[in-house]
Length: 429
Image 1 (cartoon, rainbow, N blue to C red):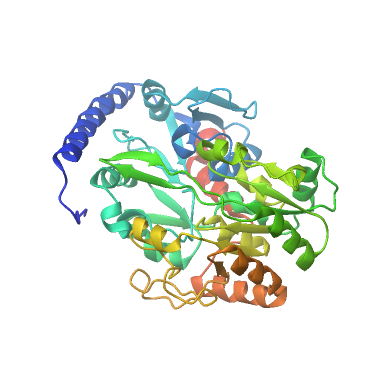
Image 2: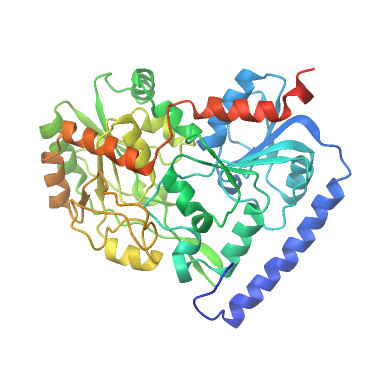
């Protein structure tokens, strides 16, 4: 149950009432489209509220479903109809009547975000939410306190009430999800399908990335991917701007000194912030900068990397599945923790090489982050110089064991088998 921590302003209350009226009107479109029969082999998918393309967990699950049963049909909701998809996926616009028609006709829904407020699911449909994060640093949902608005709660609750299963990867996620996801239903504890590509041998992914960017096959590549920043004012969302404070030239020199080889920097920021990075110029390393901010699928890229730097992105835990060296760099941790309400880990209070979980949120765990945290360039470079791969791998194994991680590189297979079993007899004849 949502319990506001501050009084709702008249302006915000008016906005919420407006959204409720709009949601009611939109729900009528779904009820009208309920006259159409459900197509038993139709699967609808969406990523990031239509802003994403062929990416994230829905991509890898769709690929596996198509492989295992070519009789399945797929529609994918997109805001930008120029997005590229395989020929066997039908792109459809992410508009109200398009959603109402195709969702009402689909036997299975797969989404990594939340369905728009006002969406209505029919009783015989199956909705699998594959979420776009599992273990994380940032607080979400009710853990955000006053940072989680009543409007955000209503959207989350409306979606969660329709979800049949959430995909998670650990005991940790199962413990935090009731408040983090505003969800009290059942789970598929398989791990994230998008991480299958990070499991085991990554030789082919490394080769493909280097060929794409005309790099030597022995090139070493570091990905820098700061987290997506978003806020809200009077219930309306906006994207934060970024300020680049890492000395990228020195960073590459430190990587070469520590790990040998010629290093390149692959930068991935949120697409809305990509223009901010494009203005960054450094003639000394310009030919070693790779901007992948507009690419749909981060995980194809991540699988080709040799090291990873972020501030608060949950992808740090996933990069570590591949035993990729991960370094945290957060020069605004005090402000960010305050703005976010709190964090899952004590980044703002614990010693930076000995960061534990936030016991107020996860009292049942006593776990230490396997990553170091730097607040400035010199600390980051010290962390790189002092990195010990054997110790790091041991920390990772201990960390994931303590979190109860369930992941073996077969999440897509497990989930596709489950979905096909649910609807199999209806589409195999």
